[in-house]
Image 1 (cartoon, rainbow, N blue to C red):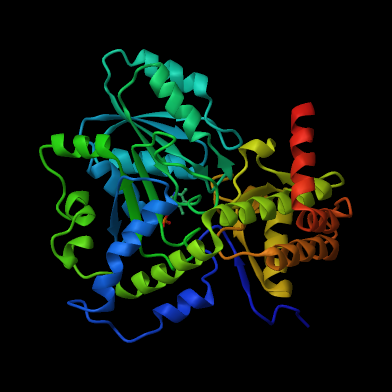
Image 2 (cartoon, rainbow, N blue to C red):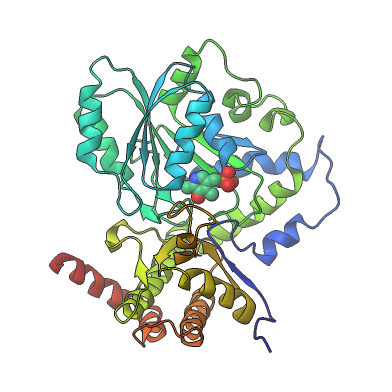
Length: 412
Ligand SMILES: *Cc1c(COP(=O)(O)O)cnc(C)c1O
C-alpha cells in the first residue's frame, strides 16, 4: 500500500507548482500572432514584470530558460576579453561564471563556499586590487538555489560605491524573484536576470533581463551584440515580433499574464510575507528535528536564508532514502542536493532541498513537513519530535513567532 495517490506536490526549487489558473490560461488554441489579445497583452506584461522587479528600468524577454538570461545579460554588456568578478555562493554562482568564460570573458572567481553568503570584505579587497579598473561587471546570485543562501545585494552595492568602482552590478534573481524581497532600483542593481518557472509560477521557457540606463550605456558602447540576444529591440520593439526576436512563446505569455494577475491580486508585499512565514515554518521544523538527529539546515544564520528554497543536510544515505520515501509513500517530490557532493557518489545521497517558491500555501508546507516527520519515523532516522508542531506554531502565530526569532538572533 502507498499513500501517494492524490494531488502531487512537486516541492523542488524549480520548476515550481503551476497554478490551475495559469494552466487554464495556457490551455487554448494557438492564438493569432498578428493582432488581437496576444499583441494587446504583451506591453502590459513587460510593465507588470518591471513592477515585480521594483524597477523603472527596461525589461527584455526571451524564449529561453535561466541559462539564456545569464548569456543575454553578459552578451549585452561585455565583449570578449573583458573581465568580470563572479561571486559564487553555490552551484549557480559557478554556473554563471562558466557562462562568462564560454563567451570569452576573463573571469575572476571569488568562491565563498556552499554555506556562507558573500563576504563584503573580500569583495572590497578584490575591487581595491583592481587598480586599472579592468573589472567591468560583478556577478552575484541573489539566492543561490543550491546552497539556499540569500546574499545582501544592497550591501554589495555599498561596497562598490565605497570603493568608487565603476563595474556594473548584475544579480541573478532566477530563484528569488517574487519570493524574497528584491528592490532593483533602490538597491542600485544595473542588470537583473529572472526566469518564468520559479516564483513566477509559469512553466520553464521564458527568461527576463532587466537593465537600467548604466547597463544600456554599456550596451551602446559595444562594437557588436549578437542579433538574437540583443536586448535593445526586445525592450523597445517597433514590431511585435521584436519582443522575442521571432515567434513569441504564445502560450507562456497567456500563462504569465494570469500569474502576474495573481501576484497583483494578492499584492507583492503579501506574496513576500507568505513566503517568509512558510519559510520560517520549515526552518522551525527542521531546527527542532535536528536537535535529536542528523538533519541540519545548510545555512545556519536565519538572516541569510532564502524564503524560496531550503537546502538540508542529513547524511548519506538518509537524504536519498527520505526523498524516495516522500515520493513513493506521500506524493511529495523533494529536490536533490546540488553542488554539495560529486553526483552519483554515495555522499550525494546525504542532501536534499525543499522548494517553497511561488504557488505554495500553509497546508502544502504543513503537509510536506508532517510527511517528512512520518518519513524519518518510517526509515528510523533519528530526530527530536515536535518539528511539525513547531511549524504549526509559526503558521498559527506568524507575527509573534517572527518576533521570537529576531530576539533569538540578536542574543545568538
Ligand atoms: C534555476 C536557476 C538557474 C538556472 O535556470 P534554468 O532555467 O535551469 O536555466 C540559474 N540561477 C538560479 C539562481 C536558479 O535558481
